[in-house]
Image (cartoon, rainbow, N blue to C red; front, side, top):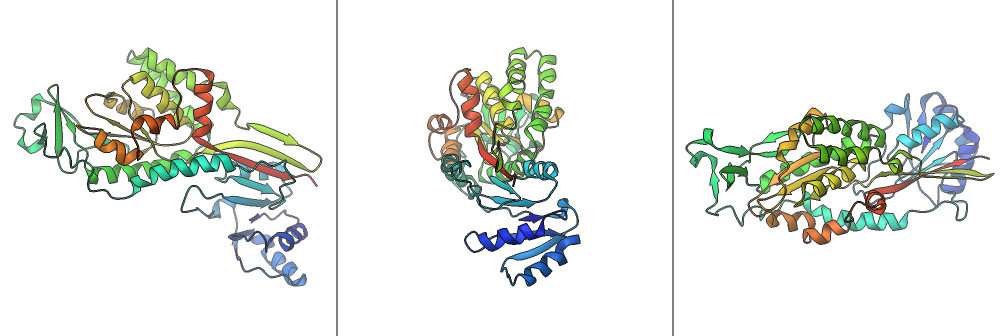
Length: 382
């Protein structure tokens, strides 16, 4: 709960007296100028709370609770007489449900609790949690393949094209120095150590990217259009351009309900997971990459000789100032070695849970909904 200095403190205490026992709070943040008055009123009403009460000077000082699992429902209550400022604060917060001048009052069936979306998020998150665990089997099955070499054993490296991994916003050599050969080039052979570093990069990218508004993400991604056109990649530029101009995305407030008692704003937030992409078609890869990035989720692209190798585009991503960790790249002689570890299933089943084939209107909208979760802001008008 966040109590700003212009709050109706009597209304705050009345609300807490009704809801505190049934819906315990994690913490109360109260602005310094009214903290003593709040405590005095609580004492006057003979009302006690076991929850921690901290003070703040500016909203920027508030350290909001971050759940350990992204599937936990987060709820925040904001109290302020400045409704416009409270709405703006609510929109900036990473929370599934935000009350303004109310707390845990669902007004019958007017407020839609996002169980279905949270269930899908739980299932998808469950599939992806495996990537945070160390797995020494990653990369081992092909580590001793005749086609896999150590870079130090290659005599004339000047005559050979070498492709490395990409994470933390930079090109990275494989930790064990292993590469696989294909068409006269050497490509980094991902091992467990590489994978763990790449995953940590994606986690950091998730924190940065998901915190940005969809408008900001689109502004950054729009830089890709001119860069792709300048290199003659007009089809890919058209794919990116269509995504950043897709009108559905600009309706940041997706729903709006108003009655005499409340106003409900509905929008969507990033799902908060790391998406794995591996495609044969460059066009499909870019289409799904844009879907994932616009929705606020980072990506790890994986490839071998049989799948699209997007290495040539990563310097373009750097030019467009896409934050580190948002787009990452792993390669392996047999990408199926990585596939099951990352997706806990074959890639076809995994990707069909998120994306649709084709470029129909539904192929744009449904995956965007699957890659995001609903957020509702409930404002009391009483």
